[in-house]
Image (tube, rainbow, N blue to C red; front, side, top):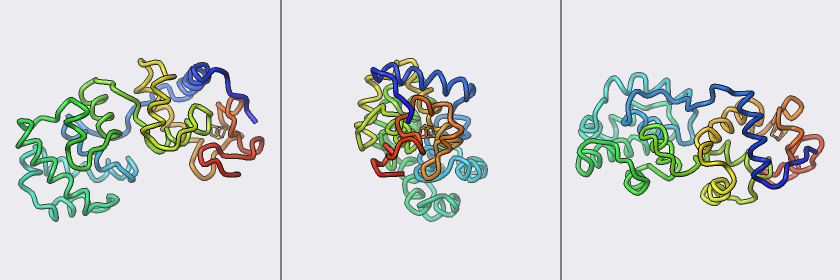
Amino acid sequence: MGTPLEPREAQVEEVTDRLRETYPDSTISLRYSNRLELLIAVVLSAQCTDERVNEVTEELFETYSTPAEYANATEEELADAIYGITFHNNKGGYLQGIGERLVADHDGEVPDTMAELTDLPGVGRKTANVVLQHGHDIVEGIVVDTHVQRLSRRLGLTEEPTPVRIEEDLVGIVPREDWQEFTHLCIDHGRATCTARNPDCGDCVLAAICPSQKGDSPVDLASGEPW
Ligand code: SF4
């Protein structure tokens, strides 16, 4: 079993250093060319792969390029346009609602506060954080997606069970200037090595400091269950 550094700030620093060396170009993998496209892409990416979202948005963004165009479409038209995305019917409704709200309440602009963003249909704190960070250069928190959640628990950075409480723990130990990068490093490592079902602990740069290391530790701390 790997031995995590104490205190947790030291563990975070070592994790970040090792992952930064492994993934020097770590950043968001959704494709977009403006804030509206970013917002739409992030909403579509909930429980869907970025790869699939990028495939679908290539054509979507050619057809719909303004909030008014989303507002004036029907939910069915938008659901058809994003067919292949998980929960496309619900998300079609979100896109239409977002278009309406941006036109009615925000002069057609994507707002730049957590409160205004999370007021939009289909936009939770995680989505809002991504839009603030990459669309407005405002880093208000740490985006906790499924990879950040899993890795943070496996690496002993938190024992909390929910994204909101995990974020509260992480903002206390990750240096503020690393908040954005930390998410992308966890996502890259979660995709490449520390996958949900079959992590490759034998070929992991974090194994020596990971208390979940498979084969050595009997327990996956992400779930608290035996491997
Ligand atoms: S791949 Fe294994 S050793 Fe590496 S961080 Fe994940 S659980 Fe720990």
